[in-house]
Each structure stands twice: as structure tokens, then as C-alpha cells.
Amino acid sequence: MLTFEFPINALILLAVIAVSMFIGFSLRRSQIAKVHKKLVKAETEMINSHAEILEIQKEYISMELKLRGIKDPVVVMANPNGNNNEKLPNGALRKKLLTKDFTPTRNEGYGLIYDNLLNKEANANAAS
Image (cartoon, rainbow, N blue to C red):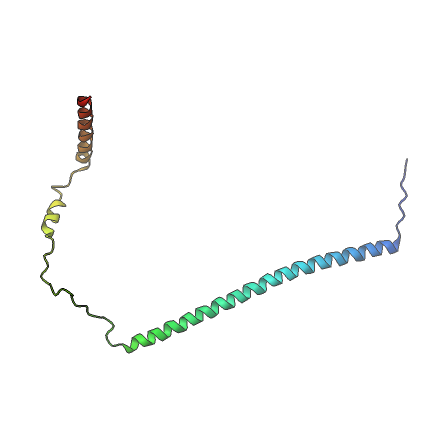
């Protein structure tokens, strides 16, 4: 049976372990630095947005205080023409058209559409 002789030097083994540990720690440190950088960026964005919200709230409160000082906030607008006797449309006709007597039922509505289509076909056949 063939055997392979593989001599291991303890100093070389320790050196390989030390180098691999150094590489592993440096990679992990760079990952942690990236995460920390993202965290700091998110925190600054949150602080800026909260500051903006507080600023807007301050403006809102100052406007509210100004409105409280006004006695009558409603402004009465006058008609520029001065013509208050305008004729308004008669609502009775609309009410009459929307009553149940004048609204077609479901079957009547489809029948009307079907009749119109048949009349159009008949006219087209008669013309040709």
C-alpha cells in the first residue's frame, strides 16, 4: 500500500493560522464598518426628518394662534351683478322623469335596444 508522507512544520502551521485569522478579522471589521456607516446615515436622516416635522408643527401652531385672534373667519361675498332674481331650473320636470312610471324596467330597456338593432339591420338590408 502506498502512503504519502506529509511533514507538518509547527511554525508554518502557526503562521498560516495567524494569517488566516488576520484576514478573517479584517474582513469582518470592514463588514461592521459598512453596517455602522449605514446606521449612522439612517440616524441622521431620522433626526433631520424629525426636525422638519417639529418645524412644521411650530408653523402650524403659530398659524392656529393667529386664527384664534380673528373673530369672524367667514368672509361674506356679494354678488357682483347684484342680480338675485335669477331663474333657476324647474325641478318638477326632473322629478317627474325619475318617477317609477317613466323609468323602464330591465326587460323593457333590453327590448328597446334589441328593436333598434333589428331596425338598423332591416334598413341596411333594404338599402342593399
